[in-house]
Length: 203
Image (cartoon, rainbow, N blue to C red):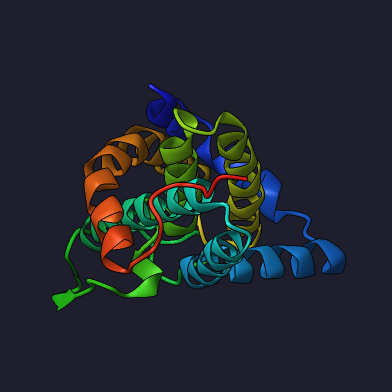
């Protein structure tokens, strides 16, 4: 229902985010879009996990690694979906629409112009929030706040429609917890295989 409602107000909300975008706001949107993508998130997450291990916060480090993996895999799932849906981005030269796998007798899988629905950036953040929701509620709130800022940046730059980021939010919150539960044993096995302690040391 949320996705259907987003389609109803798509043009109005997307247009409001794009116009007007002043120089300062545009620069902020560019930074959020650049550093809110999965490679910086992965790097920052792994660095934080390393710091937590060095600080002997083993339980928190292992949980963060689990949530990080779940969020990134949720984002990967959304990327696979948008590669087959073929929706044009708001700033695309082609007429707006959903084209599937082919357009004008050529394959369009993986072409950025036809990779709008859903938003990969937003799906990663929503996946992080969904994965953390039942384990660290305040983590989930922080991830949702970050995801909202990144979602705005993607719309402000003309890269996504409002319905794209809404669909990603629904996808991430629904799939993130499931992926997190699925990965938990594997992450614990990986953790043990690396010779890391299974729990926080006694004070």
